[in-house]
Length: 143
Image 1: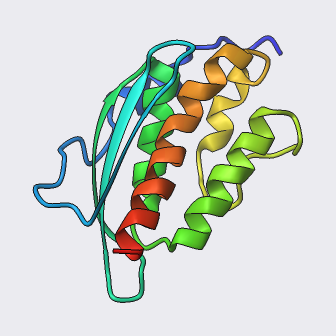
Image 2: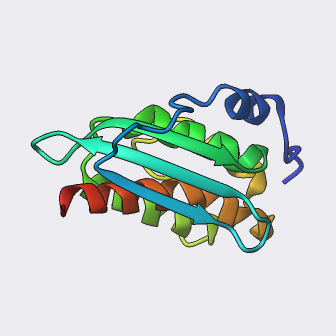
Image 3: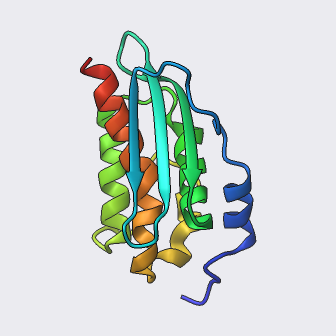
C-alpha cells in the first residue's frame, strides 16, 4: 500500500469528531487505553427503552487514526443496539487483523483507514472507540 498513513481525509475526520463532550449522567461509561501508544478514549452512552444508543458523549486523546475512528464510530452509533455495536467492534478487529477483506458493513467511512492496515502498532488506537462504545452500551442495558 502506497497511500500515506495520515492523509487529508483522515485528518479531516480527526478534526471534526462529533459528540466531544461527556454526558452529565450517563447510563453507561467505558474508558479504554492503548498500552502500545497511550491513546485514550472515554465513551458515555444513554440508551432508549429498546436498548439502542440514544445519546453519546466522548473524550478522545489519541493519534489522528484513533480520533478518525472515534469520529466514524460516534457519527453512526446513535440508534444502534448492543448486538450491532459488538458485531461492528468484532468486524473491525477482524479487518485490522487481516481476517476479513473489508471493514464492517454499515459503518461508512471506515475504508478511509485502509492505509493503517499494514501498521499493526496503530490498530489498538483505531479499535479503542469501538471497544468503548460496546462496553458502555453493555453497561447501560444491564443496569
